[in-house]
Image (tube, rainbow, N blue to C red):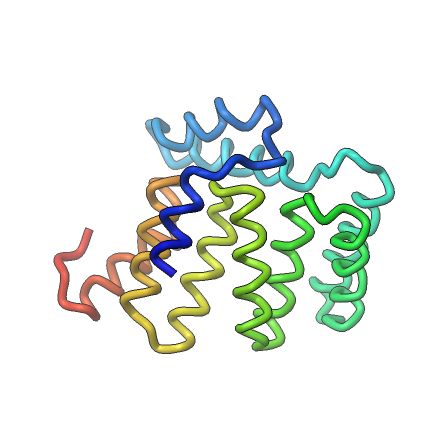
Length: 175
C-alpha cells in the first residue's frame, strides 16, 4: 500500500481540469479553515463534472440512492457510470464509497486504487483507504493514509483528528 501512496503522487489525472491546480494550491497554503474548506468544496464540485450530461445524471442518481441507503441501486448506477466513462475518477470513488458502506472492503479498496490512478490528489479516496485500514485494525496503514490526506489537504479536520489519535495508538508524537 505504501507503494500505491507514493505512486499516486506522480501519476497524471484525467480530471486535469485547469481549475483544479489553483484550488489545490489554495488547500496547501490556506490561511484559514474557511479558505481551505471553500477550496475543497470547489474541488469536489469539479470532480463531480464528467463532461457528459448522461454520466452526470447517472452519478447524481447513484448519489441519491446511496444517500437514501439503497446501496444495490447505487451500485448499479455507479457501475453504469464506470461502464460509460471508465476514465471518470468520481464514478470509481462513489462506487468505492458504496462498497465501503456495505462492508465490501476489498472491492472498495480496488475502486479506491483506480480512483487514485485517475486522480492522485483525491483526498476523499485516500481518506476512504484510511478508514478501511482502521476497520481492518491496521493502525500503521491508516496513519500513512491520513498523513497522505494532510499532504494534499493540510486542514482536513477528519484527517487531523485521526492522525493525532493514530499517532498516539502507534506510539508516535501527536501532530
